[in-house]
Amino acid sequence: MRIYLALVLMLISVVAAASEDFDKRVAIAKALENTPQGQAYVRVLYGAIGDYVQKTMFRCFPSDKKADTERFTLVADILANGKAARVQVQPETEMSGCFRAGFSSAPFPELPGYAKGGSLPIFINVKIIH
Image (cartoon, rainbow, N blue to C red; front, top):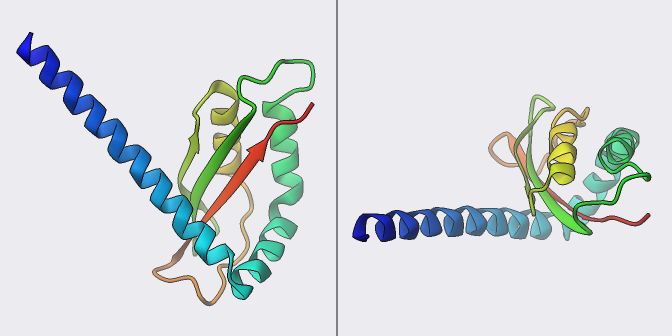
C-alpha cells in the first residue's frame, strides 16, 4: 500500500510540475505579446499562418461533430528555423490534440529581433463556436 501511495504522489507532482511549466510559458508569451513589438509581430505571425490555422481548425473541429472541448489554450516556442517546438495544449483532448499536431506544421515567419535565444514563446486561447 505504501508503494502504491508513493507512486500516486509522484504522479501528482509530475502532473503539477507540467501544469506549472505550461502556465509559466503562457505567462511569458502573454507578457511578450503585450508589448508594442509583440503586437507588431502578432500581425506578421497571423498574416503568415492565419489561413493554415483556419484550415486546421475546420479539419480538427468539423461542424458536423460535437466538439470535445469548448475552449483550450495552446503554447509553443517558435524557432529561428521557422518550426514550432514544445507545442502543448490544455486541456488535451482528441480535437485539441489534432489542432496541436496541425499547428506544429504551420509555416511560421522569421522571428522578430527581440526574440532571445533563437526562439519565441507564443500562445493562443481558442474558443469553439459552432
